[in-house]
Each structure stands twice: as C-alpha cells, then as structure tokens.
Image (tube, helix red, strand yellow):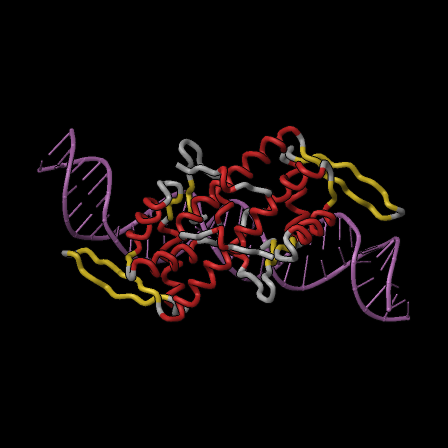
Length: 125
Length: 125
DNA sequence: AAACATACATAAAACTCTTAGGTATTGAAA
DNA sequence: TTTCAATACCTAAGAGTTTTATGTATGTTT
C-alpha cells in the first residue's frame, strides 16, 4: 500500500490506511496553495512524526490521475537543472477536498463508535 | 471493497475504509463471545446505523483466512436444517485484537492531526 | 405463489498500494 | 575527489483486499 506507518518502534500493518492518499493530498494542497511531489512526502512525514511515509510509487501515479480528473493543476519550475512539478487544487479539487475530508471525519466517528474507542485517552507524542 | 458506507443520503467512496475488516471482526467477537457470519453483517449494520454494510464476498473469505491463521475457532450448529457456523476468538485472536484496535486508534489520531479535524464538532446521529 | 430474509459459499475483475527498479542533479562527508 | 545521501522525477510487475456477480438452500411474510 502507499504508506508505511510507524509508531516509536513498530511498523503498522498498513492495511489500515488504504484509500486515504487522495484525501491527504487534497488537504495539504488546500492549506499550502502549491506543493511538489517530494515536498508532499516530506510534509506528511513531518506532520505525522514519521508515522506515515508516502511512497513515491503510490504518490506519483495518484497525482497524475488526479490531474487527469481535473482535481489538480500543474506548473513546472526549474531549480538549477532540477525539475520541480508543482501541484495546486482546482475549483473542482476544492469541492472534492471538503467532500473527502467530511467523509473521512464521518468514517472516523463511525469507527470510533464501532470499536468503542475513547479518543481522549489517546496520547500520541 | 468489503464495505459500502453511507451517510443519510450519500454512499461513501469506500476506499476510505479498506483494511479495517479484520479489526472489526476481532472487536465484535471479543465483545460477543461467539457470532456467525450473517450475524456479524447485521450487527455492524445496526451499530453503524446502516453506514457500514459488510459484503459477504469479503466477509466469508476473511473469516476463513482468520481461522486458518489461528485467530478464530469455529463450531457448527443446526437451526432446523439451516447451518450456522459460529466463530470465536482464540487466545492468539485476543492478542491480535488488542494490537489491531490500538493500531487503529493511533492511526485515527495521526489522521486527525494530519487532516486537522475537530472531532468534538462531529455529530453522527 | 412470489418475494424477501436468512445463511452459507466461491470466483473473476477491479482497485490500490508495495516493491523494485530507473534517471539525473546537488550537497556533504570521507 | 569520490562516494554517499538527499533531492526530484518516473514506471511496471506483483501482491493484497474488496466488489460484483454468481450459486445453493431454507424459512417467513404477503
């Protein structure tokens, strides 16, 4: 799957996280205006304290698909001789972002009830 | 995928939920002592107010796999001429259950931070 | 009698991600 | 100065999970 997730010592059985990649991409791009692929992997790594590490094999094809679907737009920039491809959310992308984030929030609440989790006792340091 | 998830009117794009089936099964069986496949589908439907509906095509093969892995044990019962196959969690299954539930809780917290969600404002009625 | 619910099951196809490559530039350490 | 790590893009085969579409059969409701 597209993520390797770790706690302090342990690697999650990452099946848990399937299907969240687009939601993550849309959320970050809505907040940051524009980002390039590698930057996204680093930002997610930072924000999750190394718990979620996007793999490029999953990220790049997904970015391309989302561009084809009209959710993202691109602009290429050169840093020296090195290429950077910046992605931004389109208007459709913004709508999709709020849909997806809402869906995920609802899903989390549903799962919280189903698994009887007490999120207040959860301390992720 | 194994679930069709709905809100009041809308069907989730269910990629969001991949990989949670085993966790759900283990949690329910830990709480209920023993359940049969069809019962699990109905229980999940009830507990999630129709938001998550397990499909049999995903459930039965997963139950069989978990039995083969030693996480579940089975006993067959006849209700008239109709067969019921009850599943219970083994000792290994109980350990696995708490691991999986913890993992999922951690993951939810990580995603909550990443997506900047405020769960207090989430009301799922 | 027909339709729906209960209850099991399998298999092809679809979808997503992992794993494993590949290319090339830039900067730091040895 | 060469080698390693980081930056930065990319693709493709395979693995794994779920969907969709079946199939069988019994029990209940209309």
